[in-house]
Image 1 (tube, rainbow, N blue to C red):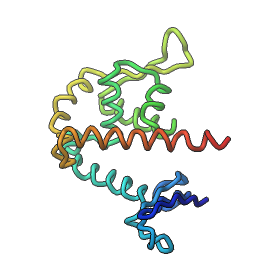
Image 2: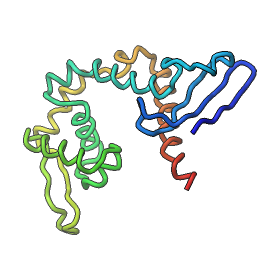
Image 3: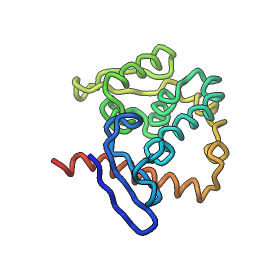
Length: 179
């Protein structure tokens, strides 16, 4: 589906694409004269996708030292922030599919960073908690400087992060609004 919003100097085109964002609406900011042949560099979804890859490269040296992938790292961050949590709460916070999260949790458990157990109050739920070794990872992870890696001031970082969160939340709501 293609939608265009035109102003005298700028056209914003929203399309559903499969190339870089897996069926999520993709926005293009295109000079009005260039709407007939958008370039990959014009796709907002590609800019975010490629920025995600760049973040992975920036974080890789520290994560390699810790023996973690980025996805494992953010799972541990959620547990640092909130303590013991159910698998379903983690899945929601991380926006991961159940099978993907289960694989990550099994790997982290095998590494000795967390343990899983049935919730005594509700046997249907599995609680995930960091071990002492998992809590100690925080010290090593503090070597990741978010501001330096992004090359932004604290204000620019905050503003960009808030804008991306707003974009993400709007994209999550978009399919629900059509129903």
